[in-house]
Length: 174
Image (tube, rainbow, N blue to C red; front, side, top):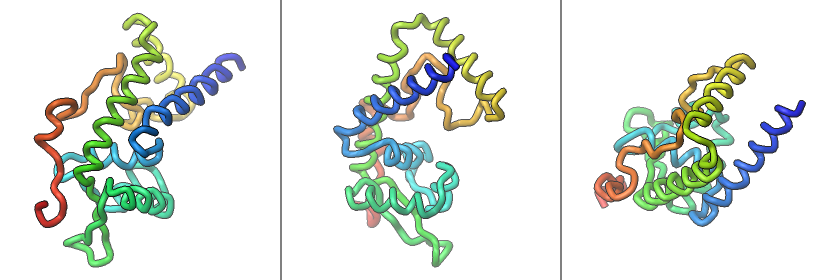
């Protein structure tokens, strides 16, 4: 019981700290997930609404609510699919691109502060143990959404000074 008590408390603490890290950018963890998924998709930083929902393991209804909030904030835009009259593409706007890159940096800083007191070898051991527990509980220990192996490093293409070179364009080339 003590192990799971610590896991639950750590998860809650990490979640609260991540929310605090994202708040200055006007987003929470749900919105972060959408923006980060689009950012990871590569140029032109867009996915169909269905692909986005599937990659985040959400219902289309849950995805729609998030997209509504992000579109209202001008962080994403919805475009008609050129191949499916009923389909919609979701694209990161230039503002959304900037927000997600800044939010990723803020989130990684939180993670580094939370684990920074551990030597690198201890971080690797912790990561390996958590992967084993997750796999033993029936989870896929190597799923992509679990993130990179520790220690936490920025592995984000174009992160930092290079981000302005690859900003997405608005529809119509603006």
